[in-house]
Amino acid sequence: MRLATVHSRSGTFAAALSTAGAHPVLDATGARFRDVGALLADPEPWREHAEAALVRAAAPFQDGDLRRPILEPGAVIAVGLNYASHIREMGRELPQSPTLFSMLPRALTDPYASIELPAAAPEHVDYEGELGVVIGAGGRDLAAAQAVDAVAGVCVINDVTMRDYQRRSLQWFAGKTWERSTPVGPWLTTLDDTDLDSAVLEVTVDGERRQHARIDDLVFGLERLVADISTIVALRPGDIIATGTPGGVADAMDPPPYLRAGQICEVSITGLGTLRNVFAAEVQR
Figure: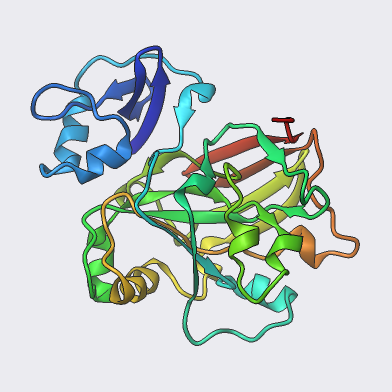
């Protein structure tokens, strides 16, 4: 099942997607959910609402109508150095535990949004294609065996990174949470509708392949990450985990082909869709 947040003249709404279009998901009172996050947070089972939507009429939509599935997640937790290929290209050893850092929700943007290259750091903007995990039931101190039940689904993320700001200190926050820089989407796919063991992540810039890796190259998989993070903080419906990026980032190349104004970056994962974002010079405010 694919769940999306769709923009319309009357505002955004959560929808179940099919070949017929977007089927609005309704709560027990018959009202539309504002986004997939509101659907997941509803006290009634979100899957039942979504399945009921699929028997109702669908509305057509364009790619540009899709917004990030979770408009305002309570938490965005990212994982660094989590693909063996990326760890090797950065000259590091495999970690014994996940490398975690947080991002502000306001760093997120939509799957087909134009992304501004910041005037303060225009020369070192990098791409990082990632698998995103969206929490459904959530919980605290979850065992790895419970992790799948806590997850609503998965999506695609481009963790756009300002490398010069990332290197200002040992903490990565400044380079990783630039406002409206991280596209998410284009929808949420439930785990029963995808095969992550064979899925491939790919990133292209103006059609040139930059990253290409199987998801099973992850050092710490979905179950371990959910269990580990839940020992630190209770995971809640709509929280997002960005699981890390594989080898092929611009920063590891010589010379590094950082993103430039006018370039188009696409991030795709088998069965989960494609993000497509054009990079533009920062608008003067």
